[in-house]
Image 1: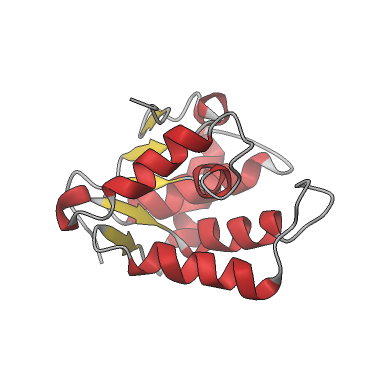
Image 2: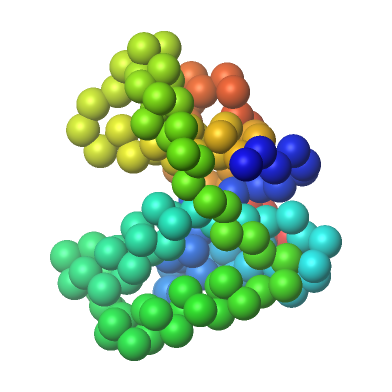
Length: 151
């Protein structure tokens, strides 16, 4: 399945910051999520970004105030219920896509998960990504990484 449009994926860090008011990126992350109240927002998440969100917000080593399983699952349900939010499917050819990307962008360790996100995006025809970690996507000319704005 290929989705050709102006869709933009939200990286897991955007989702995490949107649920932590003390975060320096809270306002920008919440504003971006608020845009998804509009059906025409053309924002999306991936199963991987939701899994990373859950793993982060429930982990006391990653956040100062970990969420309970119920609260984290409630947040995921809220995100998915937004009228302008689409859950991108994992393309059936995602493994061949990320192996091809690895040939052009050899990464190791946790950087692989960013490459996997790019493979999922490209498999769905999505070229834009909102993230607070733009540098993690430097070198992926196939996509445009954008920092969410608080204005």
